Each structure stands twice: as structure tokens, then as C-alpha cells.
Length: 251
Ligand code: MN3
Image 1 (cartoon, protein in one colour):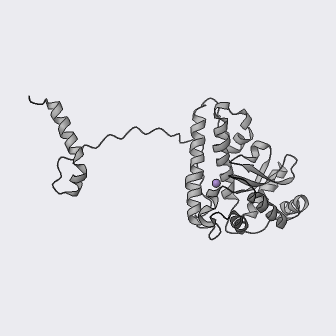
Image 2: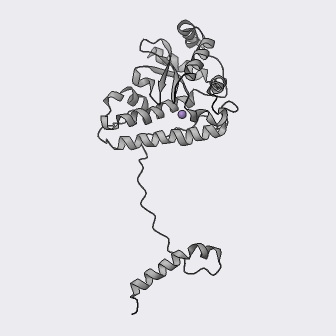
Image 3: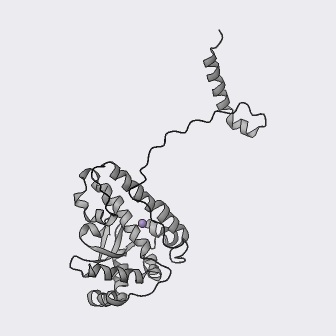
């Protein structure tokens, strides 16, 4: 029996495929394997939200926050929150009308139930990290103006705030954040929230949060979260936070 032409082609193709690895090593390469058509990529939504670039170089916060942590934290963790948030929103196309991330988190209760947990976690992750990068800076500095006065009046001053935030951040069990917020009555308050829960969803306005997930410090500080919580004060962007306070209090 002679193979049909189609069968012969099939056999040849299989042989060519099987020999590809060897063929690369040998100058006697046979018929090159046909380039397989690319598999149709699962279409990942590319919006509506995008990963904001870091406002400084990856190594800018050295030695307090190391370069490798910044790469992983921003390029992998934060990027994943953005991607998964977009995926969740794509499941409810009639819901999302293009508000910004902060408004979305403020109105979490109005998000369709089918995606509310995803938006809480992934949207919270996006909102929290977007603010986090902006509140850090190699410049350091000190609280100023009305914000510095409010820190004194509401919380006993910056040294007390550092102590309290380090203490509260150290007591977060598992993953979460310690926050300096303006509460509903526009009073400065320190609180902790689990996971990626956004203070915005609780009626608070976040001024500065410290990420105490292990991914934020483990590469450099290992299991010693307390060292991270005392080092981070060297790279807090107090100018930015003071300005953010001014705008919030005037709003
Ligand atoms: Mn994080």
C-alpha cells in the first residue's frame, strides 16, 4: 500500500518536528519544522486601568527599600492587581462607567456583587499601591504647615505618629496596611486594615499607608518587620503628604 500524499506529508511533518532539537545541533538539519501558528492569546483586557510608572528610579530608596523589592513590588505585584481588576470589570461591562480608582473604591458597595470581592481586593491593591509610591521619596523631609499642626493637635506630633504606626503595623496579623487617614470628621487617625482593603471604602481619606505585606520587605528584612517599619521613615515624602492633607481639608 502506498501512503496517500496527505499521509506522507503528515509523516514527514512529524519526523521533521521530532528532529527539530537534534537538527538545531547538527549542520545536517533536515527540512525545518513548520513554524506553528501562534496560539490565539487569551485576550487580557488592557484597561480601563493601567499601571502607573514609579515616580523615581527603582534604586532611589536604597538602602532602606532595596531595588529588587521595588521591581517585584511594582512590576509584578502592583501590575497583577491592575490586570486582575481589569479582568473583573470586564465581566460586568454595563457597570463600569470610567470613574477613577479612588471613586471606585469609595463606592465599593455599589459594585455588582459578582465582582465586588475582586474589586475590593484588586482595586484596593491598585489604589493603595498607587498612593504608596507617591508617598515615598529619597528626599525625606518633615511634615509642614497645617498638616504638621494637625499632627500635633490630633496625634501628639510626628514622633508619636511614627511610634504608633510602627506599633500598629507590627501588630497586623497576616497581610495588611497601617494607615494615617483623615476620618469622616477630618481628624487625623491611625488605623490598620487587612489585606488590600482601602480606607476609602470605609469612609476615610488615606494620607499615608505602610504596606506590611511580606512582599514589601521580606527580601531585605526577612522576618523582621520591625526593622522595615523603623527604616521606612527615612524615605517618606512628607511634602507630598502635607500637600495632600491641605487639599483634602479644603475640599
Ligand atoms: Mn504591596
